[in-house]
Picture 1 (cartoon, helix red, strand yellow):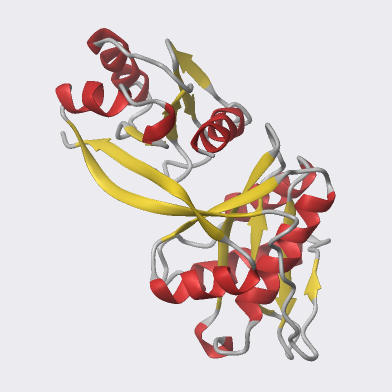
Picture 2 (cartoon, rainbow, N blue to C red; picture 1 turned 90 degrees about the horizontal axis):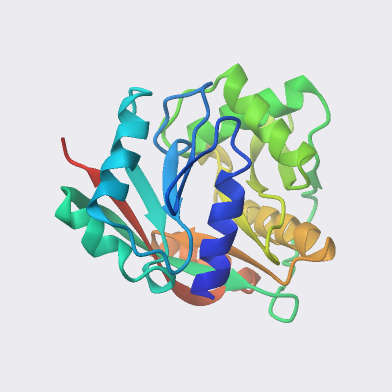
Length: 250
């Protein structure tokens, strides 16, 4: 699965508005934001970078005023971590990823709750705001954030939210468009006031099912906590492998 996940990441970053290739690295740049979670690079599977390749990648980030940062599955490109370390990169995090397939997907029952597809600018903005609150302000709600959610949907991905009783948004999430047979589920979150009702599991199942129905063989996501892991396992996600986050310290 490492090669599938890595091949997907390469294809996904090539969709960025200002994607750049440096030797066997793909850097997915988006001029609308300086967020490191949007602007990062990844190697193609099996790439053996030279120190000069890494220095050239660093230059591509520096020219844009960005901190050099990569995300990748080390099992698909075993030579990359050592090359990055030689030029000063360190591991920021190692996240396990989980995988769901049509045979493991389980749709939970949550009485009265419905996952809706955003249609209007107001829907996308409300979801962006709700996800900011769900992730404790890790990013600031913005027109650019709402536009990225809309672009995910327009490119063939799945975006969904659960409407609050007052007409707002309790939370939701997004799943990328499939590439090389798989897709990534990201940003599933619920505002604190609406947690404990099974909404995250409902959103996860709805978005996963939507993308699998479009022909993906699998959907994967990163897991960083036991609480969220239980939610994903309830829906049918199973252990798949590990991804590294590496960045240049200076």
